[in-house]
Image 1 (tube, rainbow, N blue to C red):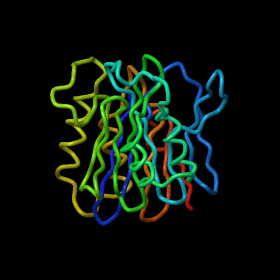
Image 2: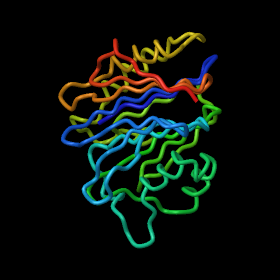
Image 3: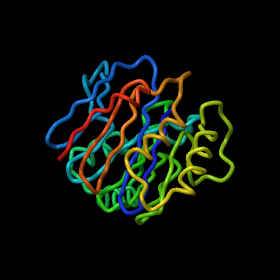
Image 4: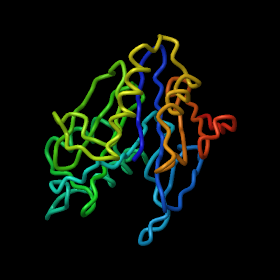
Length: 227
């Protein structure tokens, strides 16, 4: 599932709820970034989400329902590898955007992972493999849950997160110019999940170069890493 938000007011603030079941995960803070890692049976620990010291953020919600057009074909580039390249500072957001304009991007077979990417200037790139992408130059705010954000009348699915999207939109639509880390955690709390549980809530204060996170919706126990 998952929810990603990017807000540009006096500060650029990024929020991310990781909602998963049956996966082993961990947070790895380093001087280069704060990485949420998933233990893959083949690849081992993979840094798939989080923030880097350059100011980029990678979120990767799952699209429900799965779209067959995201399945890999010959010569495709997996969106997960693009995300990792941005997170590990091998590519810039603009380079990722240029790449998806000229190349077909896929997900893994029978599961559509989307990308909610942002940079230090608050620019946002949403990618839905097989369906396209959209680049937003420093929007007031952007939200991604579990349906393609630029497809009219997306197919209905119980996990598509339209309720979460609308809740986040109602809160961000009235957010003041002083929107800050605590405000972002309040939004993440409002859209947190229990059925497919929110296991990590993370906020990146891009302007102040600080990452904050908590586990299992315990918003009274916030950890911090500053770059």
